[in-house]
Length: 265
Image 1 (cartoon, rainbow, N blue to C red):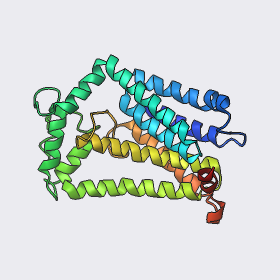
Image 2: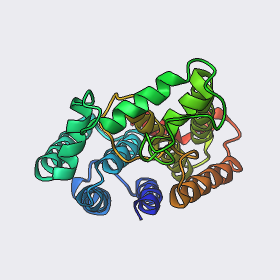
Image 3: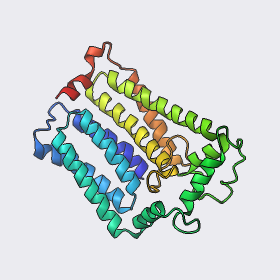
Image 4: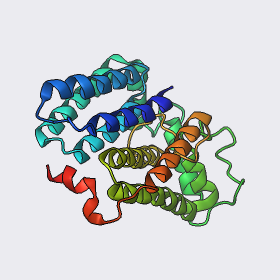
């Protein structure tokens, strides 16, 4: 459900921020019509608990806020609030604490850090060109969740550094063209929606790869377009369809870009 809520929230925020009467100076209206619904959705995701999804989606929404011209002081307040909420969930949730322990003590191969350690072994085993497609040993019950959260580790094992680089390049290409579409969108709604979708693909891909390479604790975030899972694949394909639809109505001239107005406010 959180996958569908993610796209729905991006569309909702783009709709609210692009309203002709929207004004960041009207704090009461902004709080009730935009911030409160966003906080409620993120709160329900945190309660699951799905901290990774909540953090990633928060970054997406904050990016949309910044593009829409949100004052810097509001950004600081929201970042502080998000940090406090995450710390609170980590303190009260044994599930979240276990993931933090796995990140800190991955040296224990049979304890909390088993999954992270096996992920690093898979990445390191591939070398530059990899073991060969379908020849990974780590996916044979050594590395848990290999088809979802840790599929990037198997790409590194079977296709090597080259395969990882190509995967990142392809995802980056989608993000680049998404931002390009956003910059040339003819109206504020199209611009914000394209930026939101592009930011979602970028942030969630970065979070997944960061987990696999032990830069951050395990989050349960799948790799967009690659990980197994009908919901996430359906949502991302639908998102790309939205980007293509927006690209049909691009501004004829760069001077027509709504982003210029948004970033200068």
